[in-house]
Length: 557
Image 1: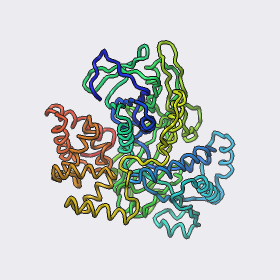
Image 2: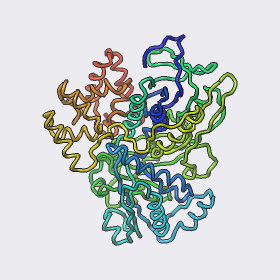
Image 3: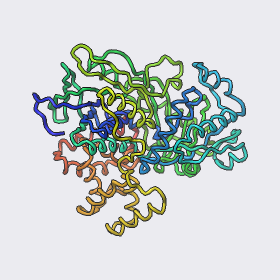
């Protein structure tokens, strides 16, 4: 953002506080409607809860049993749209759901559907079959994937031979996974800026307070900026109540739950999955999942009431729970802590609730409005709850509310609008081969290198390739598969403030378990050359990201 002096107030139509998936999605939508917007985050874009999902784009089959049928309908539609609009990072995920009884859970599920606060502790084959049929029905709009299949024991064991012989039946249905959710958040911000040149995005920027409609913001250089807007949107996720208090809006909207995940380097497990996710009921009745994520096995997720996003991490008892659940599900495979290469945890910004079970707290979204009051002349709209999958629909609803309050109408639909590197992405194998071959011939780079860039950045790889052409493709000695020019392009073009932004969000180096101390040194040197860091600052960045990765993500460097 260009400099403003402390006494100058810049005016926007809308200010969005919080650049997670909901805030970024809304920022993009509003910018596409021609509004001048500002999006602000106290850390990096997509660095909070949005960086800690199960990395699924799913319709929410489990919400059928809690009666949230509208949420399932919207989620399946948005899943189908994301498969079309973000094919560079969202892909189909066939999912195997085992059952260990025939009839259990049916009556308990009916009670839950009618409002009981006790979740069913077992889901028999009949209940699963009914659920899969309903899921197909709700996923019919813009369908892009096959309908479900259902098997009894013999066929189920043929499909998934590593699974416990206790299985009674199983089904295969289709959802989707997202390989780079943090990059998609950034791409939404970038798309918004491209659509509205007068709009701004600021990371590492803290809200200090507001007075008479003017918001005071700190910036990364230690200065202050003064801004105002007709509408302020609070998209701060688990920090919503804190931000509202700073704005003079008292109350409690958020009652979050903690979700943790681990990633295992376990080739035999990944091979046994056959490209599928297993979505299964652990021995205590809670739902767990395991699937192939970039060659590792991603395992999750817990659902524990918690409210401090600053200190959340995957704890020892959660890890033991995951490993014990896998041992019970897949008894022929060994599981131990030495296989863990990464762990992460986040707070889901769910609505405040007195539900007896965290799993019964609604995953639907709402946007309550605090009308102007006292010396605050602007309304504050809070983005409460929601799922990663439904961010576009949520953004559309809130954008339409804001436009209506301004007396304006929507000019651009986002329903079929590609995101970032999804524009012009080659979606079938023949087109992909042709795209790669053309760039390989033109650049002189091996096809495998082009393919890796396409997987990481979608069609934005063209811009990366242009930079490589100018700078050369000297490889990083201690980071296999990455080049200096690739990292240099990220630092120059993607609003990098810290080393962690590169290795944890603009790339998947950290979560893939590909980082070493030497590799971090090498990447930090590239960033320092571009950003002008001296040795002291570079050492601070190395110490900070090392502390984060070792203390919170269980990375061994």
